[in-house]
Amino acid sequence: MAAVLQNSTPSRSSWPIAPSAGLVRGNPSAMAIPPGGFFPERIEQGRYGPVFPRTPVNYGFTIIAKIIPGREEKFFQYARNIQTAVAEHPDVLEVLKLHTLKWVLFDIEGSTYFMYQGVFDTDFDKYTEDAVHIFAATGIDTVFENLEGFPSDWKTNPDAFVRFVREHHRPSFMEYAEYSYVSAKEVSSALAVKSGLAEVLDNMQL
Image (tube, rainbow, N blue to C red; front, top):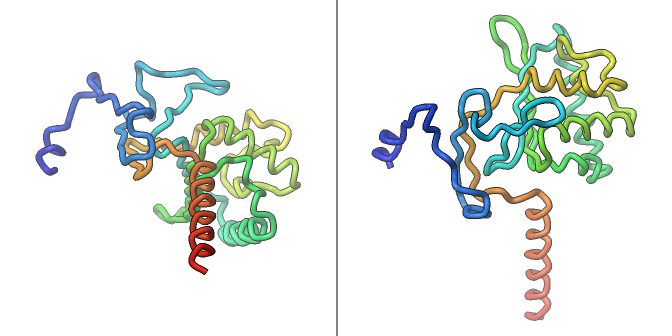
């Protein structure tokens, strides 16, 4: 494996093409992504700019932004609110088609930064639009209001929300999935089938 890693260093102009989704779907695969997050020869324009490519992990983003000083506790409180909301209404975030969501606070030279990292099945811009819709429908404010530079009119100006997210997104340059290009719905369905089969087998043994 070491020899493979040492010899697989093509130039940016000859960036390797990852196996197609159809070939590796449901199996392990990795994708190396050029600096900037796009493949120059395969850029697709979306509503707000280039569409970030789908990877074996599916779609996602990593937002890193400086928080307003003294707002740390608001992030922890918001995390507790999310836990409660999902416990009471498990489908509250369903429209986002999420796989995973991770929040981190960390310090750089005396300033605190927030990292919002999500993996989901819709494209980058639709995820952001759907998030704004959830906030508008539920009356919940976004934790992003505690970030420096976040637009104060985001509830009536979703374009500004999307621009902020794009400006603070830090694209990954390698993504790996043990089960590639599988949606969250497919994972849930497979688990439900497995549970149902297990129940049938248990009943047969009675």
